[in-house]
Image 1 (tube, rainbow, N blue to C red):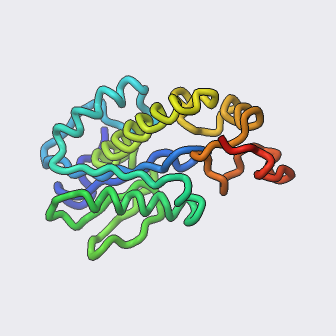
Image 2 (cartoon, rainbow, N blue to C red):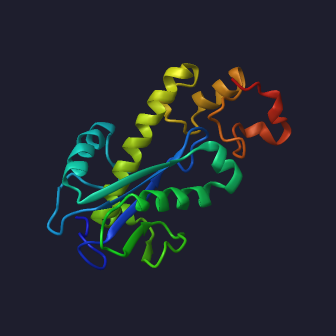
Length: 204
């Protein structure tokens, strides 16, 4: 069972989704839940089915005292690298909160100080603490919605299914069609990229 809190009942949970994708934004969510909130289905978003995540999204949004979601797009990721972009997305999600809490729990082992808040990094925190798990669900579902919209523009990459992750299907489509304005050019888009000039892939 997930632990409700790490430090206090009003702590802010934050997490990101899409860090390892080849296309689209990295998305972060931050959430503050009521002290006595619990829901047995909540877990690390990666351990939940798509249907369970979609089911939990409106429950979390309606139950939260505050929540925020932020996207950092591929152009910015290419400029600052994915770690800095992920942390920036979490900061921007926290910016949206109206809360007196100044304690943040973060999934993973890297974060940058946010204003005068205290933060604690927790490895695999999304499978240990309720508020981080809740943030992971919001980040994942909001990012999935973005990729579904992008799929309509570029259906040949099947982003509605792979969400921009480096599946064989996605990489085969990059080889066939080239890259789009949503691909992360700083990433290794195809395994042979070390010997392939990225400009050979015609942007769509």
